Image (cartoon, rainbow, N blue to C red):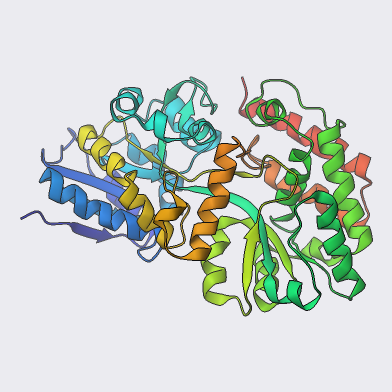
Length: 428
């Protein structure tokens, strides 16, 4: 009988000690054991689906899974050390992006997966915009080169709306940008601020980026995200984003008080029913199901082909993995329709599931919206990805815009300079 052994490591110090204690020749795992790390909670959509994947894997392969629970921060802070030691697992979940998976790939710490991708057909299964975060060139820049990771779930930004407040004021879900502004004006006319927002953290940066995407094409996204060409921060994309945010503050669609608010403040404002609309990520979905004090639903940003979003984090195989073939088999199981459907039933965003396989109506709509974006090649990543410091710099610019210390032109000039200054750290 195969035994699944779970080792819970709750402190970063314990992790560091475990990684550095071993010395001498690498100690290989037994030929029939897969060591696995991930940081998803046991009651999360991914955790539930992957627990079932472990059962299937053990039943089909006769191998045992040794699952070690690590937190996101534990893995993030110590990955370079552990993956360059004999303590590396066979398979782990790791954050996507140039500064994370791309960096490890460029350092030779992750195994290229091109042969496995061809063998299992993952390139046919995953949409092009999902593949972007799975592939990295020699410099660790996403979008080209070899496969170094495989996503099994996705994430994206959408509108959440309070159905009861829409019904109270006789409003319909907007299908065009003009209708969106008409809905927000109707709430303002009733003394209601329509948008839950925060500029101290996301999500205002996501809204700003969505407004740029409304004027953008895929080439602009590639220029902005993977440095194909210089980005003009006085061009129509950025100009539309910044001017629209400023206009929406002036019109009362966004409160100027959002300057000092955090994402949690905006999210709980929607949960409590203070604000009828909230534009942010699918990661809020499960929490709203549990905590929202009203009926709510979702819709994609009207009139735009692209939205902020990406694959979720990646399965990666360390170069030093003892059983990479077992790791590949496990990855393939997590992409099977039945495992993907389990993820969808529990409020996740599977990358390879049909909404018809999910019984819950709200969860099915979450998947339908995501699949709509995939069909459009509409995942445009996130505004802060291009440089290591741009998240804070964009938030600072938006705070200045909201509190009136920066004009629209001054904000664009400031964040444009910040963007350019950060590129040498990531773009060669």
